[in-house]
Image (cartoon, rainbow over all chains, first blue to last red; front, side, top):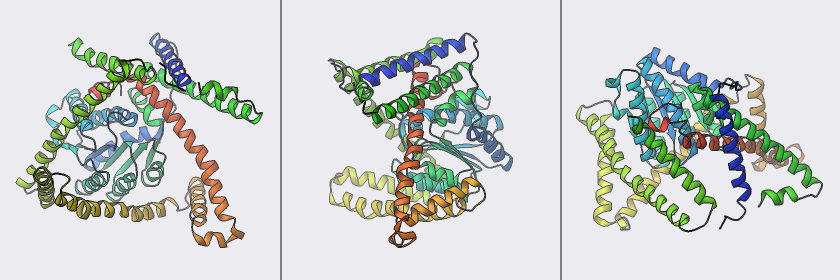
Length: 256
Length: 210
């Protein structure tokens, strides 16, 4: 009836949802919620778009390899929304390259909506939200060529990236673009760290939606996230301590 | 207008709760319905291929017609796209001709792109390892130890301690850092899912929440 060894996972999820809900209620009621620390990578996105506009060069965004079922891609939608709104506000040209086809449709809608909100619907070009390829290195080659050909001034890469991250980031550097990279993929983070100007590491990409919106209700959920992390860290320390003493009851409970 | 905004959020909430519950509770018809939902997703994703092809064709056809910058590349792309599609439809995707193109052209191109990583990595590493700050110094020393520890020469210097040190760096500080990032990312993904399910984050619908 119930998936074996998943009881603790289910329970954790329920507790987490309850904590998130509690913080949403708290912030909706106007109670003080802790402020989010400054995330340099997210702040730099606006700088990069501004500089690209000043130089008269386009802004490029790519959400990486995965589809709409990947949380990294879902997080990238929030960042693209912000990038598109800022580009529309500055009247900068925005090019979005896509690997996954369902993501292409969603991204077209996000960018269209942003230009509409900025009162510049005529500036939205659906062909600037492009499908590249669903082959990893075909996509990498396509984006690398685009960065050079279009003389991109700001290159924002946030989502799910693997080995092609190096090709994208280094091509952006060679094209002279200001770059922000962000992913949760451990093996791709070093590429962004060495080649991009700023890197969003792991959870920072998930905080982007709340951070960029400055919405207190959304910010409240980040506080819930931190509380959950403190709880998990506590469990890790407790588990290490108990296992060192030869007590395995916590392990048994968590494997339930 | 209100319903136009609320309906996608309600569908997201219903589908999301259903998928999460069916992941844990194995009572029929939940697993079967969950499988059906997955099939719907695959079918709708297949439809998106038409959109992708239309997007590519329009973009590159316009470029060829207007003789835009580097238009011959667009022509090559269109010829390859429709040529390979025709080959697959006429001789079947299991046919030797289709297979030959895949192995000898596509495979070679993928290999060439992948091999470029070595050069990209070298140029990026050169910039990153220049000692400009304390962080860059740590990065440079750590990378040097791990690289030397993974080549045969590493065993013959410093009394053979370098490979052991390199392995320790990978196993202890590197794994600890990686797990910390993964832990934060997992909690972040869960929080983002909750925000989307509750309709607080609606960027995927072209709305706010970002």
